[in-house]
Image 1 (cartoon, rainbow, N blue to C red):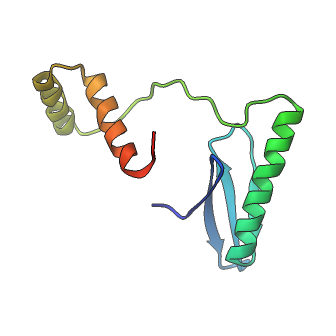
Image 2 (cartoon, rainbow, N blue to C red):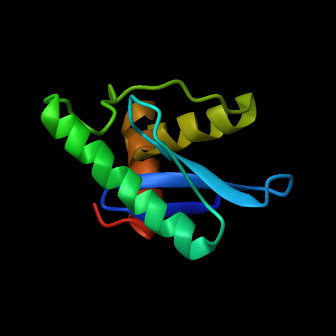
Length: 115
């Protein structure tokens, strides 16, 4: 797992700059640029939460959905060998390749997050 913070339904990916001796991050999964930083882990976490709260206030004020909207479709690049194996398994299960991929993703997500 990447170095990440979570707060409410938001994820902030974090990095460290040895040049500046500071932690910094960006809120992911939104249509805007929201960043945060801190000299300590505690300060970084507090500033992340504060950035999320300020972003939520701004979204409410301008009547905007805070979370990035996704279409439900995306391209997946895999090796031809894996594609062939997945296709055969889908056939054997009597489902489409799309259904097989969706089921596989759901099973993986269930390991980490309650749906």
